[in-house]
Each structure stands twice: as C-alpha cells, then as structure tokens.
Length: 495
Ligand SMILES: Cc1cc2nc3c(=O)[nH]c(=O)nc-3n(C[C@H](O)[C@H](O)[C@H](O)COP(=O)(O)OP(=O)(O)OC[C@H]3O[C@@H](n4cnc5c(N)ncnc54)[C@H](O)[C@@H]3O)c2cc1C
Image (cartoon, rainbow, N blue to C red):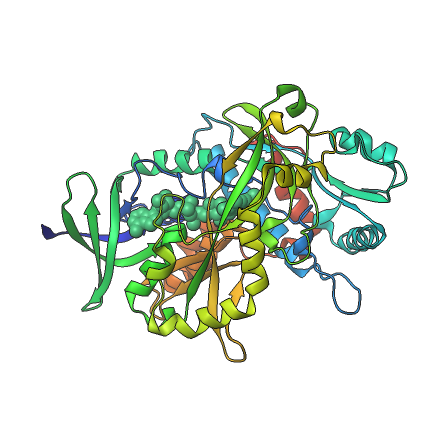
C-alpha cells in the first residue's frame, strides 16, 4: 500500500555520521526546519560509522603516509595533508561547540588523545619519512612532531613494535602527541539522540528509501516501513543521501544529470582484534606504516590503540577484500544492480585499468590465518595468533567516474555530488570520511543553500559553531593555536 501523506522541508537518508552532522548544522542554523530522517536498520550508526567498523583515527595527516605523496622530482607534496589537518580542526571546533553548549551530552567520551605515529623500515622508506618530516615542519599545523631513527628512543615510544626486531635493521618513526582516537559511532548516536528530542525532527528506524523522483520541482521519496511492509511517499524541497554504501543506487535513481557516469567499486574489510589485556596495555599509539606495492590506499596497515565503551582496545589491519555488497548489511547483487547504461563504460574501463587492484583484493580475501599473522608480525614481531580475533569491518564503495582519456577512473576520496539547483546532494566515497564530516557538510551548505549562507544570521551562527569558519588555519598560526587550545580544553585532549 502506498500513501502520499507527508511533506517536510528536509529529508536525510541514512543515520550515519554524515546525516547526523548535516542535521545538527541545519537545526542550529534554522531551528524551525522540519526534518525527517529514514534509516533502514533499527539503530543509528550500524554501518561504517560504528566504532569497530572503522579505525577511529581522527585523520589529521600526522601519521598517514598516503596523504603526503612523493613527487616525481623526489620532493614531498604536503597539500593534501594540510587540507586534512585543517578539516579535522574544523570538526573538533564543531564537536566542542556541541559539548560546551550541552547539545551533545558526553554520556560516553567519544574522543581521546593518543599519539599518532608513522613507522617504516629499509633505507628508501627511512629516507622518505625523513623528507616527509622535514616538509611537514614548514607548516605550524604539524608543529610538535618528533622524528627518530634511534632504536632506543623508538622502543620507549612503541615497545611492542620493537620487541623481537633485528638490531641492525634500519628503522625510523615520527610521533605526534596530539593525535586522537574517535568513537564515531558513539558521537553519531549522541547527535541523533539530540536531534530526536528536537521539535520538528522525526527519526524513522526500519524505514528503507526505495525510490527518489522529482515531480513539479518537489522531490518524492518512496519509503518502505520494514516492519509493517507499508510504503509511503514523502515530499520535500531538499534531500541529502547520506546512505554510505547505499548512496550510489539512490543517486542513480534520482535521475539528475550530474549522476551520469558515476559507478562504485566496493571493498570489504577485516581487522585483527587483540583479546589479551596484557598485550593491549603494552601499546599506546596509532602506528601507521606504508601500504605494500599494488595495495589500495585504504589498506595501509596500522596497529591502533582504541577507546571503545570506556575500555582500551587494540586492533591491527585492515585486511581489504573483494566483495559485491555495498553495505555490511547489504545484498550480494548490489554491484550488479548498480550497473546502468550511463555508467557501463566508466565501470568497465575502471575495471580494466585496475585489474591488479582486483587481483590484490581477491588475494587478500583468500588469505590464510598464517598470512594474516605474517602481516601483523611485520609490526609486532612477537604476536601470537591465539591473542587475536578476526572482526568484520565496514564496507567502502570507492567512486568510479567518467574520464575523457581513460573512459573511467577509480577514486579513493570522498565526493559530494549536487544537482545544479542544490535541491539534492549525495556523499560518495569513504576517505578520509568521518574525521572531515563537518568540513564536508559546510561545503555542502555552500552549494545547496548559497543564499541563506550569505545572510548575517547564518554567518554569525557558523562563526559561533566553528570560530575559524571562512579562514585558513594553515595561514594563521595564532588562530590555529587559539582554536587548538580551546578544543583541547573542552574535549579534554592534549594540546
Ligand atoms: C574499514 C574502514 C576504516 C575506516 N577508518 C576511518 C578512520 O579511521 N577515520 C575516519 O575518519 N574514517 C574512517 N572510515 C570512513 C568512515 O567510516 C566513513 O567516512 C563514515 O562512517 C561514513 O559515514 P556515512 O554517514 O556516510 O555512512 P554510514 O555510517 O555507512 O551510514 C549510512 C547509513 O545509511 C543507511 N542506509 C543505506 N541505504 C539506505 C536506504 N536505502 N534507506 C535508508 N537508510 C539507508 C545504512 O544502513 C547506514 O546506517 C573508515 C571506513 C572503513 C570502512
């Protein structure tokens, strides 16, 4: 049974961190807005945003070596690192605003300080890390980073990684004490608890969005109530598709010309989760290495301290794998159902150009327990398999786009696709993702609500929520230090 029975100002599809962030921003800017949120599962943040489904790294480009690529002339490009570090500072400002104003209640502490470290071995990699460190020293966002090639010093920082290592191995590490671990699941659920309690906001669990169509300038969203089986159509002026891996199929259904040529390439993930408390307590850092040759950027290995439900944890991974599902709780037909006439060529071309990646992912998925242990022992030589359990991580759908030269290209970042009239926006891709959710949503507001954004009211509110709004922290060391001191105090972090 299908009824046309509701209309609303805004529809948010999916209850992950992206919809939560946009919903919170919109309600702060325009408290009178009617917002309806639809989530196909029976809880918020059960896909990529949940704590064990991602690594919880507050991506600031302190330790992630893929954000500072080596240029053909041998120099290090730090532009992406600066952008990510600035974006994370923006996120911390908005989160501080919510905590300070008791909008989000910290019933579970969602952010903790933890050193962010890079660790490499071999002459070439050590030379790269040294150069990277020198390049980052040019920007105050990375001030406080330490570099060492001294085994004794590195042992003090990360004893677990140094135990059982051969003495003459050439190694190097960097350490940034102001790194963070973020439980994005806890943060997302706090934001939805708060949104649910607001006037004119309705959050519907067990409701799957099945179709999106525009009629007479109004979006009609067909939603199925998974419990009763009933379908209804909700009319709205603005819709955000924040459905994670489920976003691409909905974008294609919307029929907007901007969707033409987009496809998706799903990648599954697994972690090793440590079960031995003694081991867990011997490590206190997020340590990122270099991806092996041919591996995609999202499979950079890391040994991570986590804080989940008030407990210290330890994970290693991710082990990426080939899948045809777009969501953890998705269908094996997702990939095939997403193929349309408009994206066939880009998808086939991207597939042909990325055969080594597909081969790598299939190899990863068929890894034996011994092979997984070998990968872990590169970082923790004394690791024993009985102390670790295999956990399923979240899924990522990498963006495939049209390309004039190659026909189609595979991208590893996130991308917001908007209709020209700003009435619909969708977030595709996964990395650096949750850490930069606030900047992503501020950018979306600029594209979808350009007139309101220019008003004095919105400008003042935005500056209250994000004091550095409209300014580049990389160009202003004084402002950067001020906002860092403030957010560290409110969020109880090391500065
Ligand atoms: C293995 C892994 C490690 C990661 N590590 C990090 C990290 O260390 N740091 C970091 O910042 N980011 C990390 N990320 C990325 C981060 O997890 C994502 O960027 C972020 O969680 C995406 O949030 P989202 O709201 O877009 O999607 P999600 O959290 O996936 O939420 C989407 C929601 O939409 C719902 N949905 C889907 N289809 C429909 C539909 N048709 N109708 C209604 N509801 C629907 C889903 O059920 C889900 O609840 C990682 C991701 C993965 C997979």
